[in-house]
Image 1: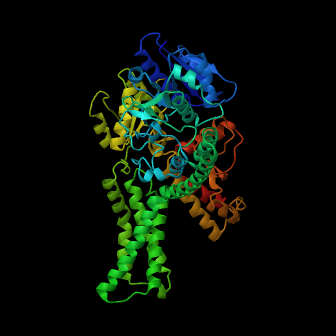
Image 2: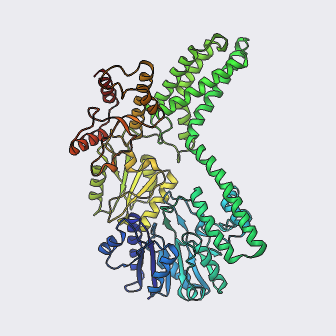
Image 3: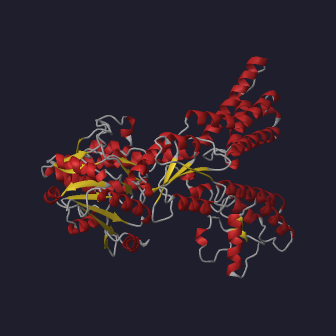
Length: 631
């Protein structure tokens, strides 16, 4: 037998389906009986093992009663395999149909090759640097863990860890390969030994790559066989949690392969790298999350300062620093409040929300300026110009961002534009699934998968592309790469499961576009409207009290403070029925949806909760709260 493909799986049924479909298609190109596929299931709780057995009878399923980890799972499957070549393949990968043919031809043409790796692209279409790596020396590990390598990704000195001196499209000898796709010569594996089971997850591929070289073989990076690696389904790469798991793996590796001063240097560099990464992860997380809001606030404050100085220059009237600083603070606070309350930072941008944010910022600035004492005021002409600027500034900023960075920023149309790429026999069921699951408010169009310019077509018109995996791994990879070039999110639908997997942005998946109906609480703008009602009603209760009706105790200032602090919401779900976990997340409610009171019937509670989730209306919320206060 030529090839044994081994997949170790743990609770990733959807991605495993994509992997098996593409791997079986690639195996067929090698000829009948020339390849086998083994799945080692690490005690998955999602029914993966039974599902694979039922849907893929040609696949050998090895079941474990406990999660043994990546190394032990691969070793158990390797011992039962028979191929001259062994491929360790992650379950979150998709391989084009000619991948195995290409890699086999390359490996057999180089008799000294013990292992082969390939270029990997993630679900966003970005090339993954871990496709080729160097030996993780203390300095290389520090540059990797600290993120220093990003300053010069092509540098052999700063980016030795990812072999920065070797181009992504260059076939070359490298030191370390990725365990996500690791093509191994059986003879080399027998000499070097199986994966070290001291490594539970991460690091085992580095260790095996080094041992293969020490056994007299070489490792190659074959650039001619790219694959998709969705990556990080169990651990978010780049997060501090991942860095710590990686640290544990590197600690085992350094203790095994380094000694003396080098081992000490390795430990020091790893600790320094983790601390540097913790700081950078904290800063990056805050900046990314609030970048647009900070931009609105910063530009608004600068605008206020410039307007004051222009007025000084044109009129000859001086303005002290304190009134200027107060006006800058008013401008920044108003812009931030408007953006937060009306979703001006939602991506893709929505014109109505951006305009409302500008209007709210202008109104807030006038209201705040009106209560300022005379000594902290500036010219009313300056305030008038500032209000006009706040009205149009959010729209102008976003127009610039969309024009300047079209891959990252775009306008959302009134009806979300979704494109479908599917084979002829799957097109109708895929289209019915999308429309039935996510509502008629989606603008669904068809993209011809055989059109060479399909990538350019959907890149200009569509917010999301759903690619059916029945088209094959080559088409899936091409669609994802085209989406990356055009700034369009591409999700992949498995043949055996109705799911939309992968993607570059969380806010563009079909579930995020129209969850719980076109007016459902799953949509962020609906939840924001509900929060506005909560805040305004809490402020009203704090000012005038809850009255003397039968709900006076519930409409108390104590509950109002809890709602303002984000601990409660005024109207929440009943719960207590089977399937309630699928509801959009809401805080505990002071009152229950429907009539405000809890109901005895489970079926009635379910009906009221589902109706509220599907058809939320902030006016109805306000009407019910007013009714409860008057009861």
